[in-house]
Image 1: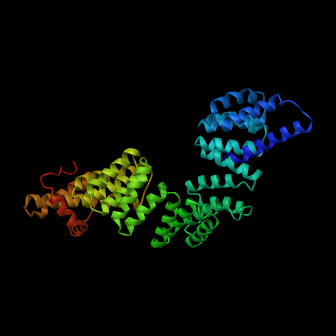
Image 2: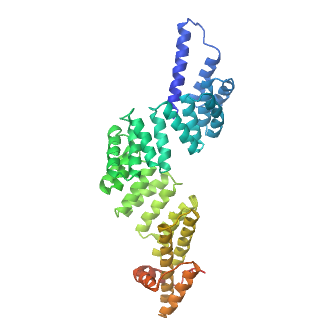
Length: 418
């Protein structure tokens, strides 16, 4: 986001030097302008501590360009909150200065203050409606908040000035896809790849839209083009892996997802995707290990516990499945979720209870149906669940393979529940 600011600074500096030459100056210029030049040169050479030291007294003296340059240097050093503190009074003093607005927007953004960043990006866009860089970043924040309509409006307004800006078309495709307008999203994504055929982001977006459209073969081709440009693109590796899982090509998916993990070992999404591929290959131990790693990286994600419950059921461990499904329900409730997702979690819990009770009965070889029903009722009551006899019977019939897998662990399973 530095380019507009640096362009203005460099233009100003060139103008100052040209003016001194035009006036017949025989010596190197001295004074504040030369000090600013020296500080900017230090910054552009990557000597950030020295640049900060040189800029600080100039900024304290009220030199606006020095203040902006110091803020930029602080942000380059990852100190966005300090840049916010520096720039806020300047923004109050210069409310219509577009460079101040842009710098403060970036400072808020880097400090993780999305609401303030959005407000300041909006101000910057009012002052400079053609600022494509600010429009892209503003739309990214809005898309992350699932404000698809507003993101689309920001992009649409800026496309009037830059109809051939590939990244704006990428952002438009994301906005349209978020609103369920898949054909229009495809059009924007195709346009982005036409304008920037060497942009991995453009091909990634096209691949993602094609995936939603059900065009899996074409999506795989688009993912391939993205990875041909950037072989280490983490999102493309992850999403291609998931696509291959859906296509039933689990072994190929595993190869791709291992690459994704190598590139981004701290990616929860990549570990979750790897678990899905291992699950499909019936590598339940590997799937569980991948999900446990995802949970360590980001505790408290409901989907991870749902996946752990489903893997545990297939692995013949209904006790673990019940514990994970109960954790899933607790997390959903803690997040204020109601309705269908709670019902799905409870259905998973009931299935685990029925599978465990039937597997225990098979292990005992007593064929006592009443004992099974009593155990199921006891567990349902403990977890505040309800299920009719008909529902229990239906679950038992539809879960035969799960019961057999659990019964195969007769001497190794821990007892479920209280």
